[in-house]
Length: 140
Length: 414
Image (cartoon, rainbow over all chains, first blue to last red):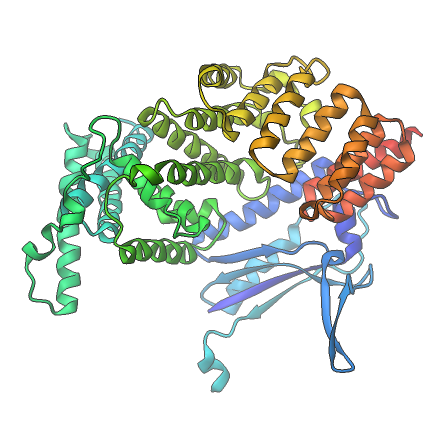
């Protein structure tokens, strides 16, 4: 069974990581290096155990476009999110024996390093969601 | 022999073994699978039992047997009555083309032309080249490109199917097409190199290996076509660029611009080899884009510091390059060189002309160059703003961090 582990963040979180001056402390080169090393190891462990399927990171929400209908006509909005709104920041798909195992993998992310005194916009969390295997799962 | 030594020997032998099989039996697609299995068997067996006296002969024997099994299974599936004789030799596959040069080539080159055939997408050309010519496994290629193995398996089998369907003969392209087809081969090697060099994300080690593999393949082409100026140029360009690898990223993966790199970290052996190649090519041949880019890289690599770089020489080389290729990034680099030679204002004037180029519209590089030139000109507030605009336009995290830090530096000292 496949599971998607989803990570979230706000534009402000992205900005801190990118070193854009703002309210909170920005991340130093060492901080970013530590985060990089942690995520690389988390990812590589999954490749080694054969549970890795796919992983993608998304660019900051400011680069997003929203297409919606207005009076029956599709209208495009650039950067539709508020600065503090949480949006999907990236995901990793694993294929493993049980929901509990996928949860255990996701829980390792609780140790993600961050600078002393970093102000997180929201309480930290990740979501784990089982992926529909085939069209049969939807029909049944 | 150590594991590493065996691996080098296997990778070196891979295209030659595949070439021998395809010449004898045809069936490029199945032969390629058989060679991979023979390489795998050898990688397990040789470190334990020792390398056989004739390693290539061993591989050809094992791969031929495996190919026979695979073809039999395939035939059984199709319920065909044809016997071995049926698939043994078909005219196209067996006889060397009449115009095939006797000594100047070998099967590696034929395979390269085949894997880089213009009917394949660049992604397929790259994957197939790394597997059939580079001898890498599908898993290794998938890891290097950060895609699941299943995706890479599909990509490679589609590419092989396509080559099979096209009925391409196993021979060098006709003389009339050769220059153009060589261009495609060199472009694929260049893409492989850049994939390893330009990326700052992902498992670093495997990415660096892609650059090393591209250099190895370029050396092979150079050995087979020693007189081609663009082959020399590409190999030199790779060596001269790769020489700066360790100096160009900081701890957080951020890019360090050439002007601020610690030049003591540059690889002087590689620079020496690259410079010698460029010097051997430049005086006697028609000049192509790889040679010109290599010549520019050589001028940078030989300068003791950014300030002591021979900028007028770089401007001149870019001006020749712009006549050969129409590329907005080349024009952008030319602007920077002009600014270093004639001052920031001369650069800013040229930059205004470039803004009209639609291919660069909204590109963060345009704003980053403007920011640098404004900073050079002492226009601190405008420079700071341009850095922030550039940071907002790039999606790359290391680049954002670099541009924000430049902006912050201007804010602090003003």
